[in-house]
Length: 544
Image (tube, rainbow, N blue to C red; front, side):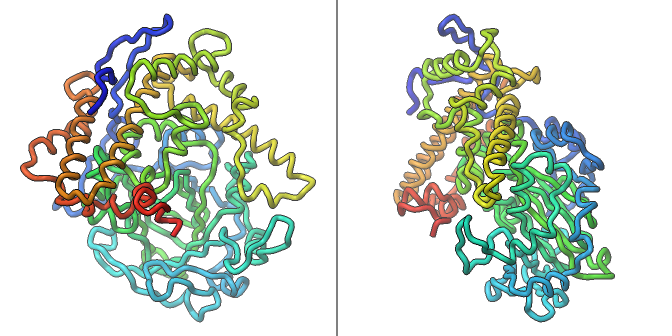
């Protein structure tokens, strides 16, 4: 049961140490996609199985000669977009699939959707000519036709059989490919992006008739996919609302189809030199159409993540669903979002005690508000993250830092630290600044801490219940009661800050004549969560 002195979602003034803190919105509030994303103003959500479904008509934003200001705004907002001249000077635009096979025959690819041919050498005869029919699904834009399985070459993972230190000359294949690499022009102004891209890119080879089923990548960073050769068609859909642990579903290939949660918003093509940039948690599927690739059926693309900016406003606005998604349960999302939400290296134990959260807000305001104007500015944050007290945010140990030339290593580390100080300062403003005045008030800070503590508190209680799955229906009832009470207490369902998706889900749970499942072991969350696996077996599932 929740403590008697816990938070409520009513909009009250809370007085502490002379400060008046107002809760600006409920902890479970999220905007609609139509309100949040300009291109989706007229979007109507329909599953592809609906009789009246038509191909998505929303226009993906496309840019040329993009500069740092709009790039930063798009990424911070989590807006998917295309850059048409992304790889205009890329050497790989001239390479065919055969060129990769001949230049790097020892490279090892993974044959996607194939249990019998997981590892395939680039020297394998005619892999770039012969389609490999694999998976199909009627909700995919291929309309159920079997897809030719793609190949992925994890260049970033070096040569698997070799383990090298930074002092050795090793991984000749990776270094050989890197010699031909060019980071997209709009990422070159920051070492933290340029070096990350060069070190972490992977190559995708797809034959005509091939593609990928709908999935959301297992990353908490922004992703860029650059088409080098051929044309690929994409469909996208935002992560749907996940109001409770019962709503979690498999984010891997085809999981959205099975859960009937595939509601595509955009459909567009990428040709040579064009790239698509999208935020974590965004579902996507692809298709290499034969009619678009008649001259050469083998297409090539590269994918990588980058470090700056953070999609912080996107994280904040949809945080309730992220806490019930694969990004939290499988990818330790709280480790990414927590330091931004709490402006601290390690978030304190979650609490529902209003006075404790008020005290934390006051302490942060006192520490960071250098000019005592009752606001936290970007300049004050940048000063903090550039000082020893805030160095936790910039002391990142990227693998590629160890492989910089000795004479340049100190300069690169200093440059990366300075870039990260700016990145984190911008992210903190974007996360907490609810009225877009580029500063953080006490009310905004309190509202952020209120939401973070409530959501993390629930996440830990969900975990407590889930590990008791052997209790059968009793555990299911416990989880249902937990979710219903939490939404009642934090969804402001009868007030001005009503969390629409959560409150509608509450009504469904209350009206249902039977439990959502007969046993918690039947939930997709039970077998896929790293956190649950660690509680049950002492190690994370992925570590096995």
